[in-house]
Image 1 (cartoon, rainbow, N blue to C red):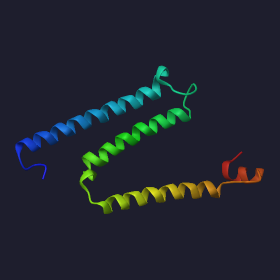
Image 2: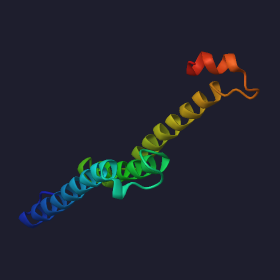
Image 3: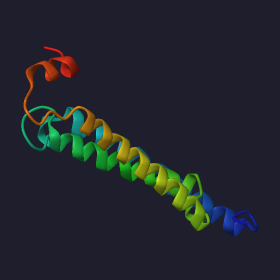
Length: 117
């Protein structure tokens, strides 16, 4: 258990404080990347590279929260299989949606139906 001794409690508290600081810095970094033109990667304004950078920062923060604050780093393998299968299912649903809106012959009516004008 993490709370067996005062030393273990201090060690856990120190880890939580460090992770909290990293999450705060990640949030500030995300805001800076989104608002400061000097930190804008790629073209001017929001583009694919800004989206990728923002998602990388968010993924890092979510991973820290899941492993440290939700204690997933101490779970059994079954939890990882369940979590991974959920991610895999989300990926396949995303690809299935892409397939449903794919138009191989460039039919203009098809695009208007799904995407508007």
